[in-house]
Amino acid sequence: MNEELIYIKDLSNEELVDIISNIWGFEEAAEALLQLTERIPGKALELGIDILENDKGDDYLQASVWDMIFDIDPGLIIESLSKRSGILGKILLHDVLEDLNIEYYFKDLSKLSLEFTNKIIQSYSSLDKDVQFDLAEDFVEFNKKINN
Image (cartoon, rainbow, N blue to C red; front, side, top):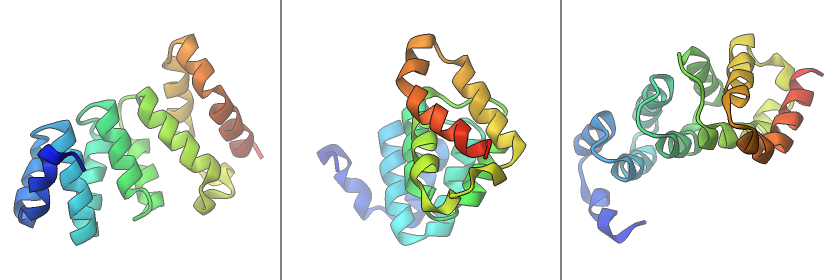
């Protein structure tokens, strides 16, 4: 934990929710969500889904949120990304592809919703070619798994 953020451990649940809901700072929101995940996982899940589904914060915050709440309810998290109006940023997309390619919850990725797989494909397609190159291995593996 960043020394400047150590105070967050001592905040009340309501104060944590306030930091996350209002995203008083990306690092603060991520640390508050981590603390809330340990205290009240259901509330952390609700707030994290709001960030992912509504494209709040920056790409790094969203990737952190994905990493923190994915294990709480993977299906619900994936559903929230399906509902998102915009594409995924490169950091979030990398984390999503990596987790789905190795995560035991989704051995059969062909059962993912069409909305979700389209969101992944659109997000990847929107990236610059050099960024696509960096993510190509994970994207190709994902593509193989959804087409089996």
